[in-house]
Image (cartoon, rainbow, N blue to C red; front, side, top):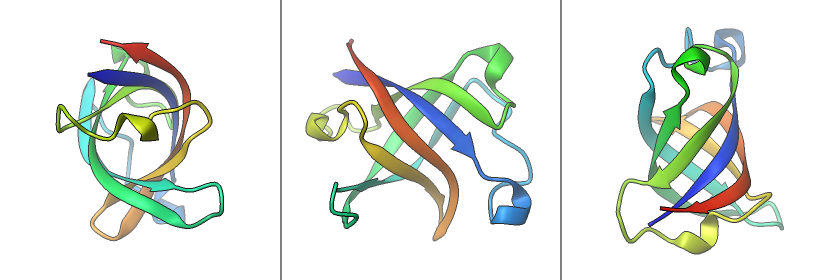
Length: 102
């Protein structure tokens, strides 16, 4: 199973984001991945794991993996852009920094 080191920017509540970033070391949600053309590529459930000291910062580096063990590893590539959704609302934006095999 592949996991990626990612940078996450949680949107402020005034921007439509959460009231505060997730408080725990693990967050699961839906990510919308984008193609280079700007079109939506796909939606997948992801798990984000934060360093405990960073868990409530608005900009964090985390490790991301797909909730499904056989998720599409071709989406976890450096510079891949994605958004984290809660329902239809975008609550964070992210970018893949590097890949780590697990």
